Length: 365
Ligand code: ATP
Image (cartoon, rainbow, N blue to C red; front, side):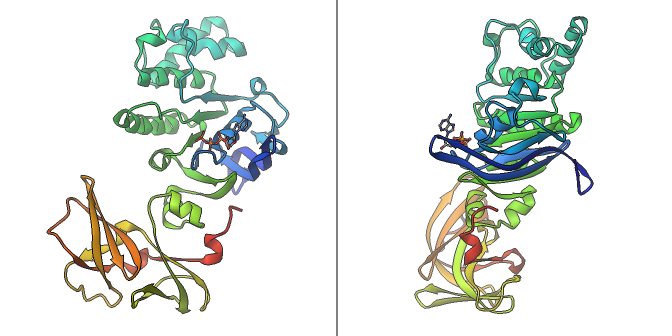
């Protein structure tokens, strides 16, 4: 159960799932450490919720195994697993008070003496900042408060695994951002192993120790937010996590990329890579690392471009710049400066990376 010194709380091994002829998960391997906050992140339909439902035991996998706390639970139904789920739509019982909703799981499990239940319910409500609200009914609560109660209902049973299925997506933006930070702090305080499903990259980055990026039923990449952002391993990951400029070319000498951008523009720049000379692929450049300047910067590797459009978003402006036949996106902080038609583009070499064409097309492994 220990892996590299850390206890593994959940292990999925070669999990496959199909609904009728439709294959939804393919050979999914995943380990979640005890006390970790892990997020399943990916576009709609990639299989995140199916994965969470399999962990909860709502249905068995087609093939493969699921272990919780070192015990094989693949054949166990949901009520025999020590997991608790919070859903997007709160799913509170409308006819029960807050106390009735929160104690529901305790009563079902019958593991806590009845006399102790009010104390446990009060403690769970305190954790989610809903202390003293025991007597309210769900219709007397805001959406955010209902979701806090749903969270308390899950936490009160002290599950080995807390499963969260897009629990914040019904909340408005400001409330959602506040709740993300609260959720993160709460999880750190009580240390419950937590798995969140979301398609919101920012949310995943705010709350998670590690993020599992899924694409078409496969695990594309598993890593910390920084690893996923700075070193995406496939095109699917690079495109789903933030924006990325892709410039086609090849490695022409050790740590040297060259690409013809069209219109006679040639880009030759140093890039740190293990790829051998002759490898075809892409230079990867995040928009926030592109510097724009009206006059030459003196940087030996800069290129010239023509600004096509500028989109002002408040804290940042997105510039679309034509370089040869390619369009490079550049983010600059604040409002657009004086109108600039021609621009000189440069970037810190340390922020460039190279992805071989074979990796870009690779499926998750
Ligand atoms: P979303 O964010 O939209 O919920 P998701 O990544 O959570 O997406 P899943 O809900 O796991 O994706 O669905 C994965 C695929 O499985 C989808 O193509 C979906 O239509 C299909 N699917 C899910 N549940 C069922 C079911 N009970 N019967 C048939 N197909 C299903």
